[in-house]
Length: 77
Image (cartoon, rainbow, N blue to C red; front, side, top):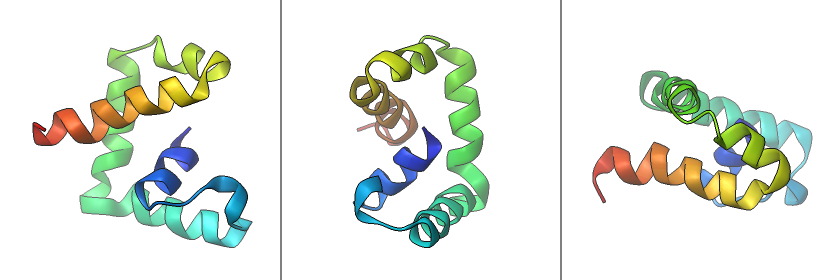
């Protein structure tokens, strides 16, 4: 899920990039703003345990929900 969130954050699709590019952007996303996204990812999952099972059945909805909780609500948009 973190890989897909990272790629989406940078406007990329998993199927359009190779493993090296995936790793590069994942590490960039993880280290963003002193590891803000990776720390918030763990917090959001702990506060919303329904997201992970949802990701298994409906990945797009789960990713959209995570994006809303990680990015949109964080900046108050």
